[in-house]
Length: 136
Image (cartoon, rainbow, N blue to C red; front, side, top):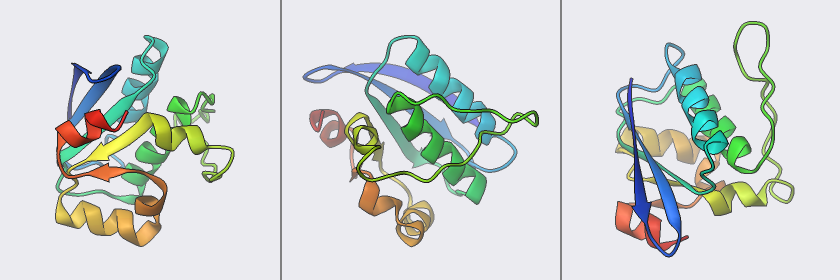
């Protein structure tokens, strides 16, 4: 998994995290750590570019879920194994997650996973980066 981070200026500054490669059990904690680093660095709005992610496992879903919790301002508990503790997203309590984290251009296999698990109802998902940036 290659992770690159860029900054974009929309109406407000937005951090764009570009993910390249499968998002699975071999690397999902890297994504979470990078998201935490970005948030601790002062970013408050994030676009996750999924255009180069051909495969998303359940561990990858954990990374996306945890990213939302981080940007909702919640601390993420890490077990001794280095894995985050899973907690369901609460549509009312975690509404700021959908305001501050957006997804862009998931490829069809990833889009199907997001649809199947219900994340498409929770997050705004855009087909292009410009639209995602303008949504903030």
